[in-house]
Length: 294
Image (cartoon, rainbow, N blue to C red; front, top):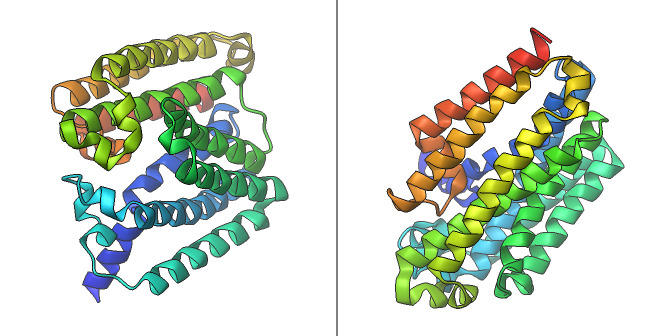
């Protein structure tokens, strides 16, 4: 029984659910975390997106079985290891999609449409854009943007444009570092695992990563000193939270280039103690500024 549970948890990629916590960003930064009804709707939205995203992950694995077997780490995923019952897997995907969409629909029609948009983006990615250089990562990054929109609809707030840009750029940063890791790990077999990797070079990706990381830091800095942020907390204490963002990006670059990590951002965040501690410290500081000493 325990083995079956672990198999399902691995199949659903539960560790990747950490990405869905971007749903809470609009609620937290709007200073409305103490609003019970809005917080509850965000939790429900989180649950719905976790199921929907898991269905997408399983569908991706189903399509990429042969390519995943080339990758040293992805070859250990449940479907790549095999054997499995295709009918059972497809039925499980449908169950997750229907349940996740039903949960989102019960929050609001807008959240439901965001979940549908997320699924549509991933379908377009799987059947078209994942073979197009640059656009492959852009479509993955849009998935994070959809999470922000879903969270804003659930919380009934409009997120800052600066905050949305920060999330998009951070997602691009994580996406391109993942491509960088795949190239450095697979080398000549990179194109066999993911055809679009044949169009990337380590040098090109390094340039793009530098641009994305620089803009992420710059835009977050602009967000924390913006008139909108200052108007809500009447001081500049949020500006000091930039320190955590800078360290987090630098630490991630260290893990990519020195420790040769970067294939699964969600797993890195949960397994690397310094970066996890930094994120928790950032959450604590931002919460303290927004909700205690504002």
